[in-house]
Length: 506
Image (tube, rainbow, N blue to C red; front, side):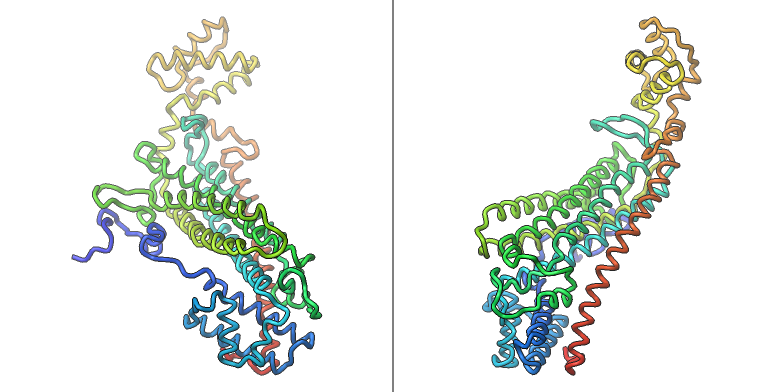
């Protein structure tokens, strides 16, 4: 008997490998070195820098050919999984440059680092890494928000209790609740886009922060790297190396907080006590002891990852609070913090999207729970004010008494006996039949009357869905344009390489 995990036979469908890995975290698998994630960006930055040096007459065309051929070779090895970082060479920059010099000699390859420092080099690599992360998060969020919209469309008429203080409050619909989750996630999309607008600037050419006596063309490298422009001040991105990381981390933390709220809500709603929704087997885990257990493991992991993100955010905030001008070695740790956050948090978006897509909704249970806990009392109160034109405060006092006296009779909604006793105590003469009382507390009727903008009626929710879908078109256009610019920048470098006769030499 071969055992890979200590649970699963109770399930109809076992979680796929990627969900098992999501649940297991780092228990049995480690993470790759941070600089392994920067190899592709270090190559791209080096290509742009070398081309610029040649255009400015700082290195020769022959030197450029040697460097670009060498970088193509590094890229090919990296894509094949053959370029493994050598710890004795300290970092990715030393590994790439060391490889070029060892393979192609110092006379040409040794010129790549002209007018460049590891300060602006790593700042550039991290800027490119985070920019790609922005596009990744925006696309994942787009898919998640769309999943919420689709599920809401399917459940426009799924009436359910709304809660305050974890208790029944007022009637709503499941679609209305889903859109309350989608709205914050849509805002998260624009937070990431805001990062791009703040930080899509090229730090390359700042050297160690204080510029260079070489006549560098920073606008050229900006174009070749798909930046909007270069940093106005060369020292700024070196001294404040923590700031783009912090802003990026803040956008991630806000996203994870929103995911954690969704997770906690569905954890409760899927319990036997609530029984409003059922999570698919693929997002649950079992017990090594209790054979009946079907735990909301993936949702609990999302909550944990949100907490981890909080800690990293505070670490970045603390690290950046007291930097002296120029490079300080402690800023190196911003790289580890942000990469840990990305690796921990980004997979949660796809997991949540799949969870929403496969979620089963128990409509009958939701509707049944809308007929308990005096949940229709507020709508009945509003009906009294509208029908009899009495002051709201007086009507509320009346309904409070009616609830109390109905509860004394063992009811969980306002009944005629309790209502009449409250009327008599307040010396009011309001004629309402038992049928009218029941009708005023009917959950389906209550929801249908909540047609105000942003409300839970089918009509109002449809308008919310349509509005959000239209806004998503805008963020999608932004994503397409940004990715197109990156593609065009890389094509320009490729055309330059082809003109030098070094195409396809990875």
